[in-house]
Amino acid sequence: MLPTDPSAVALSITLAALFGLLLGLGGARLLDRFRLNSVQARVAEITKRAEEDADTIRKRAEVDAKDELFKKREDFNREMDQSRTELREQERRLDKREDGLEQKHQALAKKEKSLENTQRKLNERKNDLEKRHEEVEGLLSKQAQVLHEISHLSREQAEHMLLERVETQLTGEIAGRILKHEEMLKATCEEKARAILATAIHRYAAEHTADTTVSTVDIPSDDMKGRIIGREGRNIRTFEKATGVDVIVDDTPGVVIVSAFDNIRRETARLALTKLIQDGRIHPSRIEEVVKETQAEMEKHVGELGKAAVQDADIGQLHEKLMQLLGRLKFRTSYSQNVLNHSLEVAHLCGMMAGELGLDSRLARRCGLLHDIGKAADHEMEGGHPKIGAELAKRYGETSKEVLHAIVGHHDDVTVDHVYTVLVAAADAISAARPGARRETLEKYVKRLEELEALASGFPGVEHAYAIQAGREVRVIADASHTSDSDAVKVCHDIARAIEEQLNYPGEIKVTVVRETRAVEFAR
Image 1 (spheres, one colour):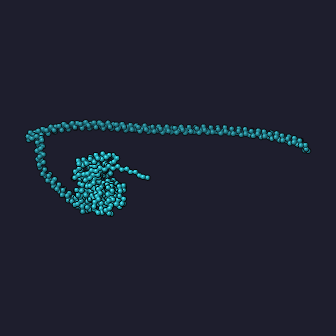
Image 2 (cartoon, rainbow, N blue to C red):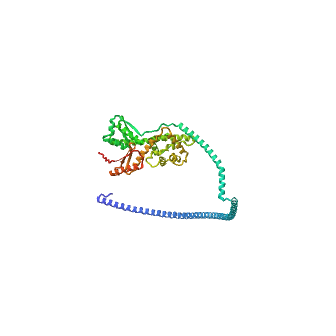
Image 3 (cartoon, rainbow, N blue to C red):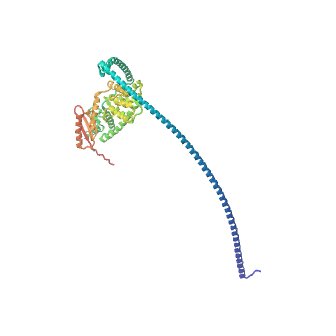
């Protein structure tokens, strides 16, 4: 029967809880003790197994170590055996080499002994020959002495008599044969040369190449002459200073004359004046601008002329500077003959003659085209145009000895060593000897003007020098930054005295030194 008192019920519950707690604690301790015993048993088992495994590993390692040691010992023994074998082989080779060297030494000893014997025999023979030579000389001397006593002549007299007799007998015969052969060779050479020259001249016919030293510029009306002259002659002075030419404005209707001995300057001035007339704006600054533009165009045109000449002559590649110099020859005259046309004519004639002789036609044309290249710069460098031309050609990459020799030797200034030089000289003479091809007076005139300009340009402080009025006046442009007014007066006096001392000229020459200070500023 269950108690009904609440306090009794609470006490019962409390006691039951305490009993359950004690029972749980006891069960837990028993369980922990059981687990601990089980863990200790496992630990003992693992420890035992680990000891057994360690013992097995140690035994295996000992076995592996013994095997490795055995293998290394075998490898070592094998290497030792191989080394011993190689040492024995080297020793055997050394022994063999030593035997060979001993044999060579013995052979050399035998050769030395043989050479000594040979040398001794040669010395004996030499001494014997020297003795015999002395004996022969003695006998010859005795015989010569006996002959001199018999003939009553000395050695020199006997030799002279013998040589005179032989010379007398052979001179006539030798001279006759030499003359005969010379005449035959001369006739043959002249006949062949005439045939070659005639063939070349017939195959090539050039036009007349004479030039003049003046150019005319057409103007729309005579009022334009006043604009060209400008106020107080300002425009025409500026134009003449910039171009280095002489502008002649006279009563001739519709034309203005441009005169200059330098054809490049004259052509540049003609083109510039034509542009100014077409443009209508004629004043100093515009004149200088147009002249500069025309000079640049002229340089380009000169280069194109040189390229065209090279293509016409078909001489292969040529340096750009040499083509520029060839183009300048278009505006250069020699005895009034256009030098570029003359050079092309010489080139073609050389090529034709070389073809007749079985030589290199292209090389001959190259020699002919470049033979007067020095005339493009003979007023800028010292010396004759053959020497200047050879120096320029060599400087700008011409390596052919035949071409260089033809340039320097086509006027017989040096000894002729190449056949192409002879061809160039012949073609040059043919081109110059045509009726009307040259006029000597013009060449002398141009040369005098060039010398006049070169002399004036050589003074310090001179920037430009132009010969105008047909050489009756020299206009000198002085550098204002390096020349004072008093220096300009002195330079003018010195140039005049130098002209009197160094040049030959008719009449008198006026020297004008211009020193101009110019200030330029831009308004922006």
